[in-house]
Image (tube, helix red, strand yellow):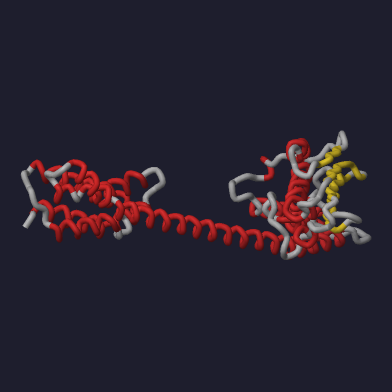
Length: 359
């Protein structure tokens, strides 16, 4: 019996067993088995061995192929090449134990053909790796959708109820006649606590609406970046921005979001449009942004904020933007025009106190 071949096969089988132990890295097990196999292959001609034990060699090759699959699937990104490459190269070179000594071209051709199973094993592992990544992205997307649903429920129901209690406390403080000091102090503390609760919920909704890539509204561009947004857009966009708007950071970022979402819907649903107009101007103490196109109204239902609303660049679609504009104390509408579609938003130029914005 070939002791060296048996030892190499047992080492590969032991590494394969260790790869399924939770605390052992599949990359480490595959690399170690590949290194041992390569060492045995290199020592085979040096020890004067002319024959190899085929059964042991086949067992070793099968174990190495499984390790290639595991390494290609589970090894960390920077180590996957080495982790899968060592056992893969070991599989290809094991044939030298049978062909040595021989014609160099024959040995090269044999090793090249013997490497095909290793290539197939690596492809299987990489395919499984891509499926794992897609599954993780799907789970992350589902969790994000659930977080956004919770955020909307929180704002629509809890904030509404808190705001109702706040209004009742304010009404009680304004009744004619003096109030007992203890009652007046309690009503004042209820009002302050309600304002703090509304502010905290607004901040939490903002955090839940954070983009997947880690971006946040404080990093979003505002009105000053609209020119860059519309530049090169097809169809051409006529941009009009009034001077001296004095927008808050939240209002400026929301105007940018509304324009971005509307242009995305024009591109998706009104490809035949020949003209798009974007107007940003003052309307009393508010800012009004209107995006209109001449695409025949085909950007309709899909962009109106219903069940089919597109996600767009903002990640929420116009339905989410309607909620966002409402949180700032404004309103958003979308609908057909005489020959196209419009999206119009009106929101305060400056941020409102929480109680006013959610009223």
